Image 1 (cartoon, rainbow, N blue to C red):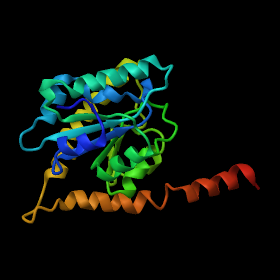
Image 2 (cartoon, rainbow, N blue to C red):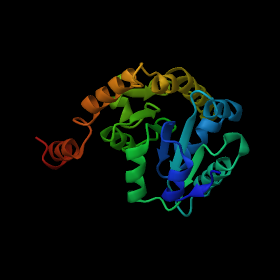
Image 3 (cartoon, rainbow, N blue to C red):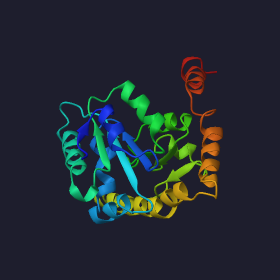
Image 4 (cartoon, rainbow, N blue to C red):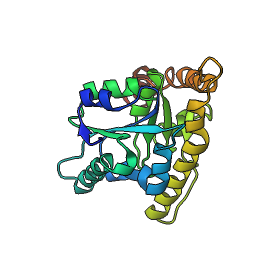
Length: 232
């Protein structure tokens, strides 16, 4: 189970009614793809909760000369095959725009874990909103402006300051575990008598209302024109 797979194998492996988290981007070291597994035992307990399990889909590539990024991919593919994770992690090979399209349309939550303040934008989180997914991110890049407390989740404070990168990694990992266990996972599985997650849907509606009209190419082109090409 698990391992590096194509999308056909993905459909056979994953469960449609399990909370599905997506992580797809360039595997640069500062993006910290393996952050969720910093405390392996905590991660295993989250993935294997019999009543509220989660599953994680990875996609992306490292630059050919980025040895650290390629090492992250090796770590992830190893985790995919770990018996304690019971096939709940998948790494999609040959990541491209078509694979990305399927991921953002199929994931419930989009995870982004850059080390502050290195994220330039993080636009994949904007694309998940268009598809009815929710963003879970370090408050960096566009999420510093986009997050309003009701349209997704923020991993820690945007004002947090750490003495070392290692300290930041530990603190962000602990906060990620807390948010998943206390907010994200219960929110997804909290259903009414008809099986509808009303609070989750309310958060999706807030995301659709507050993200899509603000974070789009219309605004981007307009601001480039007004601020840089044709400034007053």
